[in-house]
Image 1 (cartoon, rainbow, N blue to C red):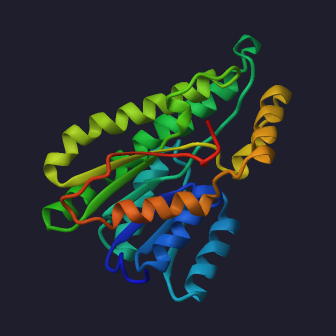
Image 2: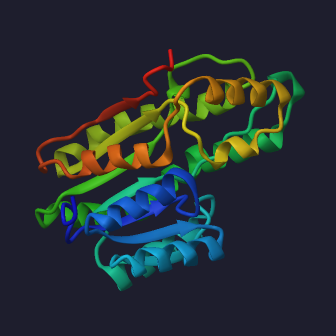
Length: 252
């Protein structure tokens, strides 16, 4: 599979762990130059070193997707060091759950700021480069990482599910603007993935439910999701896998 993405310049947010880190590794394995965006410098440096040692090319860029100034600076840094970006994967996300009546407004705001507003700002920051890549006849992709939560109803997950529903619908609408100009949008809705996000849960009921599910079935890994991303962006330019739902076989 090496070489499928030769010449591509990718940006992956949330690259310090989970789906973001796994996706960055896979894109680099397949020949893309990868910019790693996240807040944790040490983890980014470690991942960049790992990719470089394996023969890939990676650039660690400390950036918070909730900060527009960070993203504008990151866009300039990446284009200056790696070239024009033609692939953006929005791996940054937060999953914080609790009964709605508990009124944890700080958690609501963090999820909205990261999952939705941060994603919007990320796509906007790299829009000029994506459009330029498409204008030059290159493949140009945005992969939005949503969640099966965009489709389902679950107690204690109301705000999280709402942010992911917004992400999925945003991607569908942005595709109507950018698709005719050569930029593909792929919205990914994974089911249960065993990632670091699970460690952020402090609501006992939610944690018990997810932990029980993970123990009872063979759930997805972050590498599984990365493989799907890699497949979607390697398609010919005229082929757009616009909506992908990825579930563990046993999840119903």
